[in-house]
Length: 405
Image 1 (tube, rainbow, N blue to C red):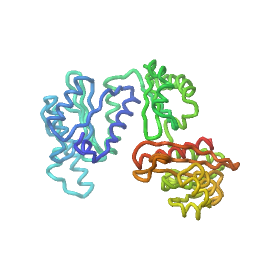
Image 2 (cartoon, one colour; image 1 turned 180 degrees about the vertical axis):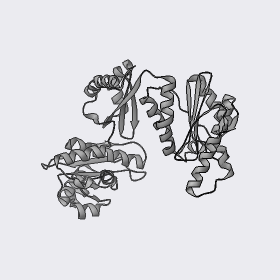
Image 3 (cartoon, rainbow, N blue to C red; image 1 turned 60 degrees about the horizontal axis):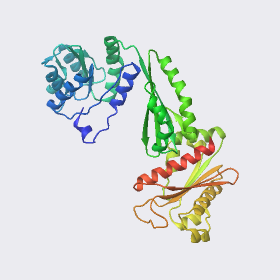
Image 4 (tube, one colour; image 1 turned 30 degrees about the vertical axis):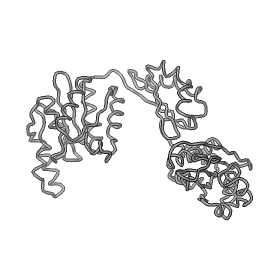
């Protein structure tokens, strides 16, 4: 909850944590709602949640200020007046005393609980949480500060919910991370498995240049759910082939780096339109010095000639954005840094500079290999400048990964 979320001033990370913890406990999550700091709208959201679920979990809005309306909204929704919970007030006072600070009068609000609530203490902050039951339904409220919420969720709320609802199942999710295949193409490859998938279920989540295939199984035990996923995964791998670069964790730059380290290979980059983005992605991984040698950002023709030994007549004959120049850039970087592999990238990222012959989005990515072979790819990438640069960098890393795996 919170107006900051609706204004885009904060990113909600709590929902993912809550949903994951509930899934591990075998509790299904059907809806998620963000509500601004408005008492009536919070009450309305709680009523709507209880009309379609057994439990509503609220995060945030338990602070001492006038815009912290969660407790008030829950009180209205359940018709349970707020009452002072003296043990919570004493715990809040004790925390201020330990910090050597004076408690403001407004902090008393944090000890106000709906009548009949069970209090969840908060050893990390001044906002206790609470659980209220009414007519077989449950409303739980936790503070929005992530570290406070995480502890309360793990140690207080999840055990309470498991004891209260006694779920007879657990939910396990596995994510097959793919790259180099479009969402529609991937969807066609697994369409029949998607339609047949009730348990385990299959979901496709597209990102810029990558697509995740999320498979979720529900069973009485975690072991049984994992066995269901193990049975389905080979079918997905058969359809998706070499598009899967990781399972559950790992970015393409991390996986490519691990492949290079395993082979004891090194890589360098020569970048024009991506401006060093590939190098930045590779070096964002701890330990990249094991395999990354360096980068030349050769943005104009003179720098391509001087720093990468690209022949002037090659530039004159084919232009800077060409298969031939991308190849020469990769070879030049390989020689300059004495690396096993090298990437050369040149293109038109826009928003200006395009032509009928070489439109915005045209990118060439070249990979110089360990045996003097050069693999060059021509790409036509949609989107704005930032998106084209990002997609070009991912394409280069994909080429690197496939060569080094």
